[in-house]
Image 1: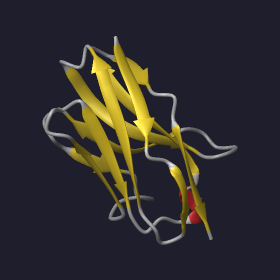
Image 2 (image 1 turned 120 degrees about the vertical axis):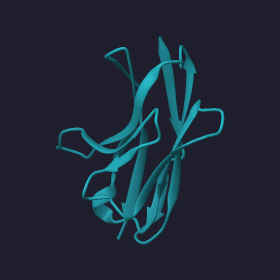
Image 3 (image 1 turned 90 degrees about the vertical axis):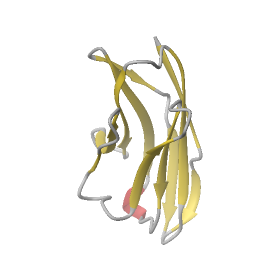
Image 4 (image 1 turned 90 degrees about the horizontal axis):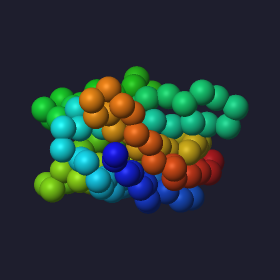
Length: 115
């Protein structure tokens, strides 16, 4: 089992920045990939950034160049640095981890970007 807890969400003005954190605990060894998803009101949850255990990152087109995904040195914390935020970035942001083809989710953290 893997437990994930997100933090760092909040209210920010357009153009501002936030850094989300995801603390992973439990059986964190052999996690293949970790990522950040978001779900805006009335929309489906979407993958916005992912990071493999080998360090390869990929981004959705909507956030590429503005968001950066990274892991802490202890490998048990995942970050999402979000810059140049836009109102359309408003959503609940979820941390995800895949281990042996099982997906684990945090409960999410709300990011609201005001115009």
